[in-house]
Length: 194
Image (cartoon, rainbow, N blue to C red; front, side, top):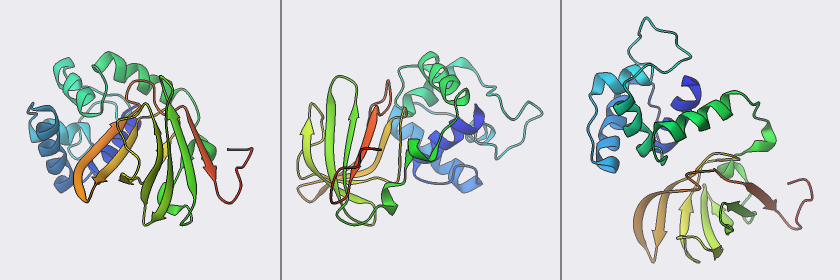
């Protein structure tokens, strides 16, 4: 479970949080995004920078700390995050569940969907930058440019940066509660397998 948490923190922070500098960046990013402060040493223990004598696969931290981490990751509280982590640790992820968006060819069209009939279609413009072509019940708008490294079914959609009308709006998280329900990749013609 701890490995899944570290991967979520890496994706959200946009850096390797398992290094001292990355953990310090994560600590500051948590404060900026949640308005709540955690000690650097607490963050370093969670990310594995500081070894603890505890089981490395389990998460050992105060509930209040984990509530802050959960909010940072886009979950309501630690109960929701813990449920999500248990689901992820009890199932196997296949290559089909993970889409490396930055590796798709320029011009590839991807349709992403999540709860409450929310859906966007995007086209790859290169270097992991995707332009929103259509948006259904999403805060993302047609013409927005999104920087997406990868998408994992069942996990929140983390966008590293949203550019709207030439202005950076910063990071964005969608599908926070239930994760991305489907990813459909269309090159020249839609594939029935995806």
